[in-house]
Length: 156
Image (cartoon, rainbow, N blue to C red):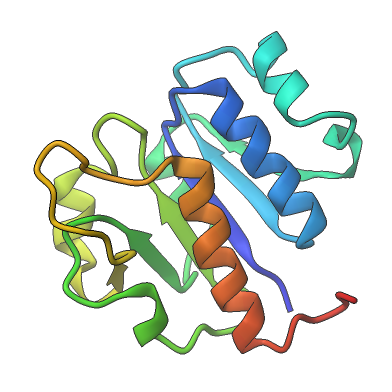
């Protein structure tokens, strides 16, 4: 079984580094759709990922169109604060993809509108100024729900 974590135009290197670590310890593939708000050689990115980078299955795409072309037929769930259903309302398929948007704006509206049936959200209090969780925390929450449903394959 394989889990694919997709970051659409991430902006904060520390978040991406933390997510890379989560992907390594969960045997997940990390897909990054550019452009990013930082260099992939950024020291904060590397530091947050510790010495795990050589263990990571990382795939980089210049844009969303390239991602779509190289992952045709993929079952993709789109994490957004705007979804009706929560991440625990779905039964996740093997080799599914979970996409997360950039920290300041999320996934573009046009992508969400084209994929309404597979949009997921993490429940939160409805507080106007507290718009969302930290990106790396959101990835961990959803990734571990998928892995829980799969019986934590290859994990101890």
